[in-house]
Image (tube, rainbow, N blue to C red; front, side, top):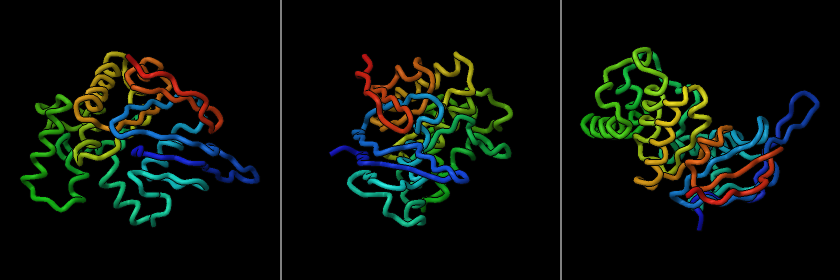
Length: 229
């Protein structure tokens, strides 16, 4: 059984008198430990699919089962609790809190979990070490480069050891060198920690790090590219 199972997954909303369907009757399976890249033109449904899988939004029709459970049927509070435990989200613009240090930004998700200060410290230290920023733990976002900020954001996303890691254009605001470092890090997380990773990108070079590339257009899945070498 796949970790993520989408069947007839559909999302519609109204804009004035117009009904918009960013995702239409999509069927998709993603196995645990896969690295999948979602590509397609703007408005093709990539981010909509990512947000549904992450539990940020809910489908209009169809089912979305994760680890055998249809998360679309959960209440908002239950969905929020599930998301806190199961999903790490990496944003294009980092979404770090400027008044908190790198350490404090990474620690934030752990404050929602019952654990000792010592346990939180060990998890934050491990996450920062993993992204190569242990020596920047006391730096504020304004003291970091864009690539370093994104690596702090990745540390924050993985610090709770989520089953699923989703990334929406994580290199879109970075220069080529920083983007390459971030993608290499994400690939390592997938290969060395068996992290299930779903990436939205417009960049074929970034997508080439994934094991499978899916192409969306007008809310429909067009093709699945072969796994990367």
